Amino acid sequence: MLTIPKEIIDAMIAHARWDFPLEACGILGGTDGLVSDHYPMANIDQSNEHFMMAPKEQFAVVKELRAKEKVMLAIYHSHPETPARPSEEDIRLALTPDVAHVIISLAGAAPDIKAYRIEAGVVTQEPITIS
Image (cartoon, rainbow, N blue to C red; front, side):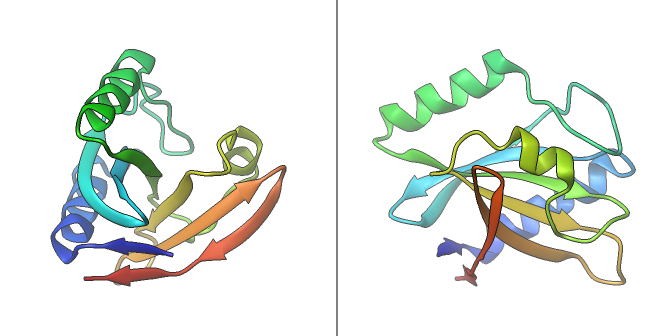
């Protein structure tokens, strides 16, 4: 289970809306399933169908989290016009089973946020608690 503060949920939604119609992406860090750090990242693919974070930027975030004695808990991205579920590409590119995948859909009247664990192509929805 992931626990995400409302302020971070709001910031993720704002990021997704700001980057619309492109996919937004970022990293959530913390400890023991409790998110405390939010890192909006640039989608270097500039696409509305997929995302790619700059490896140097990702490495800098991981390094900062380690210095704070925290870990990467989740990678998030938006689906500007599709539901909050992993696409075939999301599943294929998910290489870190210990990191959750949070998807923000902007397809409906209100944003929809869901989290998943993806391991060896198997997708399991993970509960999110908003604190």
